[in-house]
Image (cartoon, rainbow, N blue to C red; front, side):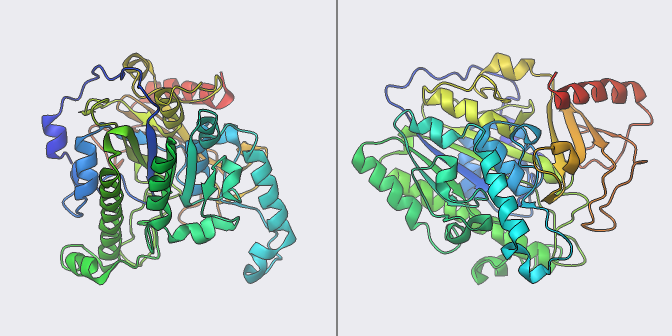
Length: 440
């Protein structure tokens, strides 16, 4: 599907490097939660309405073929914060593995869980963090929404909503119940004359899918199933919050002083038979339904709006934003500056991995590895590790599962496996994938 934005914008790389700013820009990072890559008006969707995201896209440098590093929120968010792939920062899952003997009701209070969580946070702190690096340049920062790594200070934020609970605790109120912590922070930062970095990661459109009735009524008759209607209404609810935040920036006179970046943490496709996600094709899968996302970078008057057809990665956000802020970029990062046309053009591929929900062995990423995948041009390779997940019988894999190859231009929903027809491409891309995994 292609929208009018795609039809009328040039799908080529153009000059994008902004002049050195007279002052450091504010940064608003917007991260949606469990949101399919095709569920946006500007991505061609006829199923859902996203007018505020569409407007942002029209004002942005758009990478419609963006990718997260993992289709599970904890590892994915950690990559956005660190600029590192999952097997480098080590947070391969959402939770530590707890012995099966522990009752489900006692799981998150068990000694094994709490100790595992503490070790995960300790490992996370060994990587660089975007808020902390911006803080060295005089930025104040705010965490809201999804957050897995303990207290907000763990990521280097100067302020935050999450106090240490799994998933985000009171931080999850943002967007669903209130925007006040974010809007008040923006107003306060302006008053204090400080550049700010705001992390807006609401649990939207993530389940529970409980949209306002006015939005649900809109989708009841236009969505194929009741669960799809609820999900689509949640997407529009999320979109409305973006409109409110941007209206606040405009009210404060900060629109032209603020860089806005957008990404999602992982995809979501509702099942047709029950109100849950399709784990085989979206969240926790290696397919584009789980790992693809549009990436937007906007700075009115400084970054020219255009659409870039080259693949991009979540790890690119850190170096892009640090350069815009005039900060030093860690030399050992995995991403590149999305405003550097030569670098975007020269990159041979983007890659990522999928792993078990619970971390089987902290410090050894291969222990939790289920799939590795690579996108080079229009081709996508998926390679299984053979690890069974235990999540669902249909989602389990075995050691005999062969590599899969797809032509994303001809087959964007990955329905026709070309591996048997193109063994040379499988071999060539597997060599690249192995080198990426091994750090060569």
